[in-house]
Length: 305
Image 1 (tube, rainbow, N blue to C red):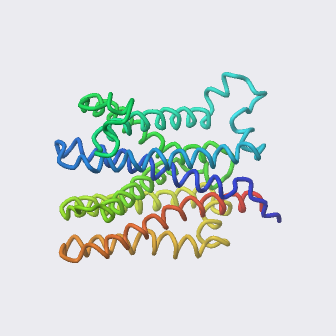
Image 2 (image 1 turned 120 degrees about the horizontal axis):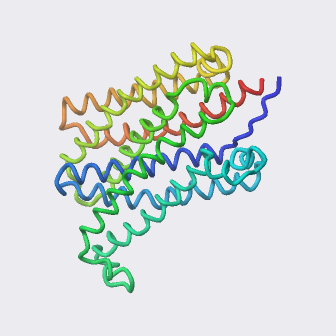
């Protein structure tokens, strides 16, 4: 048995940050569109979060690309033919990331044109008063952000690692996790705001509560699929292997059950929000990181065992 891990921590961080970036952006955009502009601040916060997080994530990815021949094999497999390069999951994902990053940067300029400190800066002042253009680009980037959030799970499913490709539910799980961590990041932005809006905070908490229910369902589907198609190298490695404690305690209890219980409690007693919602948001982020960490490391160790 040898426990060599091919995808290192840099990839875990990349998947985690890309998920938050996409989730925060499209969650904020949806809040703005469905509220008729009432919660446009969430769209702004989503943009402010998305760009730096996606840049850091891409830097982590580039760092690993420069040192991992296995990752290059995924991008340039099958005799390195250009057609395969174009059609590979990793290559398509790279295009998603590029488009998402570029559009996030352009949308950021629109938001900066409204800020007191930056609205009169050269170049930025040219974006002032063009909110309809910003909304159009936000709508496009919202869709791209959803693709970024889901493709990270699809990327894993396209490999030969049994835990990752045994079921079609990994993309769904990662999309749910990205949405939840994105909402949690927006909650923390709300906490840091100078003029907190309690109604907005309850909106975020209720939305995250619904998403956690979906994430629990996605986990159930994933475990059922692993039990049917990869019981030894999938299900057993995930729930009883070296990362079993991290799965049950870190992900299920601390990352899903505790935040869900807090959000249900706060939704029932809305006067007790500030400290509890912050705790729930932090737990969701920790759980979201552990989802990537446990699935990536447990999958590789089981595969190499």
